[in-house]
Image (cartoon, one colour):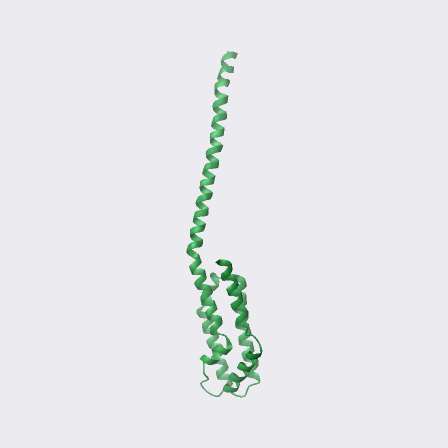
Length: 170
């Protein structure tokens, strides 16, 4: 009886060891296959999302260009000599452009979005501040143009953030 038990252990032990080795090898192989599939899926998603992200950065760069005070003043003429009406027209134009591009924040980085919102606010605040010392709509235009020949528009800072983010993506 004892010989039979020892003989059985002699046959079962190598089979059990071989079974455990096979189990761990197949388990490792399956985990590697799953990992490779996940990497392939992530790569495919990244490839699909890159054009969308680039388009969002392009739109926000265009937004910054459109709210650049110098370019905006050349594009938007005053309807009357009233500086308050002209100021409101400029601010409404900026807000309309911003609302049109608001959804793009989903696709761009938080730092770029913060820079864009900060530049928008800075442009509006500077226009309001300049309007306080202006006499008419045309005088407001002149004062803003003079001011921005001395300093860099805040939109340039946002544009530089956008360009850096795009370089990182590419």
